[in-house]
Length: 181
Image (cartoon, rainbow, N blue to C red; front, side):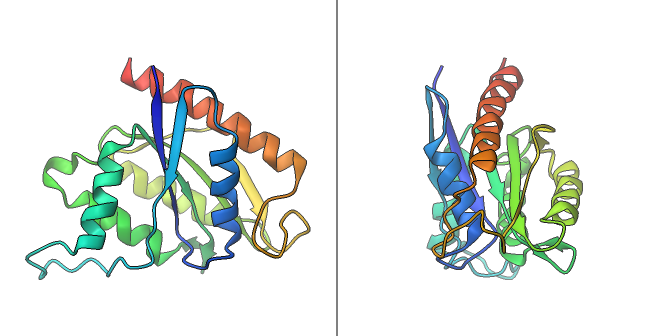
């Protein structure tokens, strides 16, 4: 059975190391899995007063709906997940009966400073409980965004991390098929 992943990063920078993690994930998928990466650069903040969803929001929500699993990569902002990532989850959670997110498997990864993105990933896991998302527990992917693991364009060059991401993408395929089972 083929699977479709959607990668979403909480960083809006073009040379983001978190986008680099998603590019590496897309390049290391197991057989039978495809992945596209969502663009959040034009997504407005969620506002319940909006009577119509903007076209940019409709586009990403359609991508989420078509995906069998999500791959979320985000920086750590003030010990938490970034506003861009939280915002698209907020938009998606407002769909009737949480149909876009409830029960959907996902993998979490991130590149940041100091402790990587451990606190942001923990906070994201708390958000997943509320949204009824099913995060993969292991392997965990934490990267130091300011190390030699990335080139100047945000591309991952560290062989250990590349291998870990490939393992995570395989584990996500197994997890997704089990949940769809």
